Length: 260
Image 1 (cartoon, helix red, strand yellow):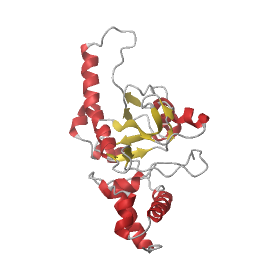
Image 2 (cartoon, rainbow, N blue to C red; image 1 turned 180 degrees about the horizontal axis):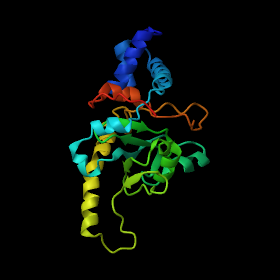
Image 3 (cartoon, one colour; image 1 turned 30 degrees about the horizontal axis):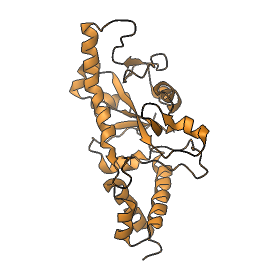
Image 4 (cartoon, helix red, strand yellow; image 1 turned 90 degrees about the horizontal axis):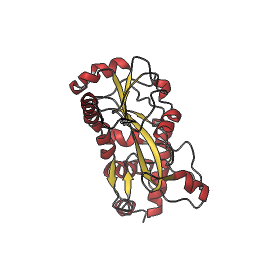
């Protein structure tokens, strides 16, 4: 059994792990190294590639969005990004304080939560840092930095849980809410249905990036997490390293514009 691998072989191992979702025991057998070596290689390359690829801008400008606008968005042609949150299961921390922070009432489990945005033509254009599972959709939008990228000429499309009209300096397409009404009007029902049909695209992206882990039996996110650095506390730098994993599996058109 080998004690170490050459850097090119380590990189190839990491690419197999990210793109094929191979379990660490399988990779250890394939590369003839100990499973702990596989774990070290994955963590090292994950952190390194995050530092390198994390600087790549994926936010698209308005011109690029309009040039690639799908015809199904004809009634919402100013939509710049479709937003949704996803939660990733995590181990339960020993600290009671941390347990209360990462516990998600929606998932009834300890989770970390991230915000994902896609352009109307399907390209992922925004990935937030990860936050504790107890955070609200409104608060995660506020803290993610997305608001500063929005312009008055843009519009965002969100689910009914995103009550952010006062935060976003642009138009917000959101399903109609009952509030104090007994039922929605016919126009509100049609609007809600049309938005739901379009928002399903971002939900499909999230589902496509999520697979059932053969190793743990829990949901395993192929965007991957950049580890929760030792000490049992959540490092605020923990983010999706999705730019790498997504580049291996993406079926969407090439994106050219950078972060503004």
